Figure 1 (cartoon, helix red, strand yellow):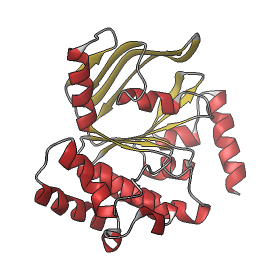
Figure 2 (cartoon, helix red, strand yellow):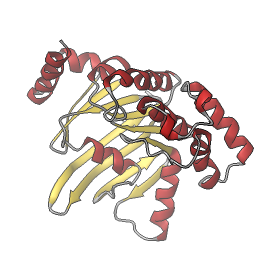
Figure 3 (spheres, helix red, strand yellow):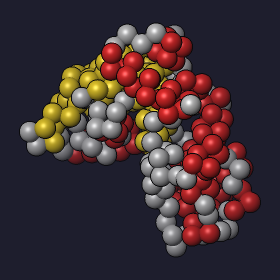
Figure 4 (cartoon, one colour):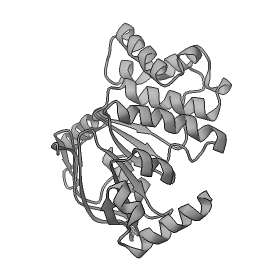
Length: 254
């Protein structure tokens, strides 16, 4: 197994007195596709958002591609480390967060040009390559208003990839989509996975977790309760809460 590209050590997150993440430690090797599943409110999205500091960890250490941030460290040094982590992580949200006044191409090159100071010509080349990869190059001059939800999410994936991240984070990327549009986004995510990108995916799409993930972690009440290959998890769940989750998925799928 390759060296971990993401390491989480003894992570805690409190919202006021509410203990949302409880002493979480995990490692994600390079090129692995990890799915986080669990009931709503189990802490999945909070964990994901802590990985690029959209949520501030209360305690613990997060390391991404060699950049280590201790929750105890404050001030200028911390801000620089968090900036460095964010340069290494691409994030795709439930909502697409595209700028409505910019074309698809302008949306995709905005980050590389303004955050990474990438040459505009190079950013356009990279953006067009990634838009082509997600099947959206033909819409590069359109505005978001004229796109379907699935198309917007594919643009959002291209935008994240154009930042050349080492790790892609997906926070329930299909939950805001109409059912008939979910497949097109999942197919793009499968393609990104097959190209060797390290991916951490919070999802309710059990079929994706079963078919695409290398590893599935189940969360409940802020803890990791099961960590296995999809085959082991779906065929032989160890924890009763995992079994209940899978049974519910199977009943909904019939």
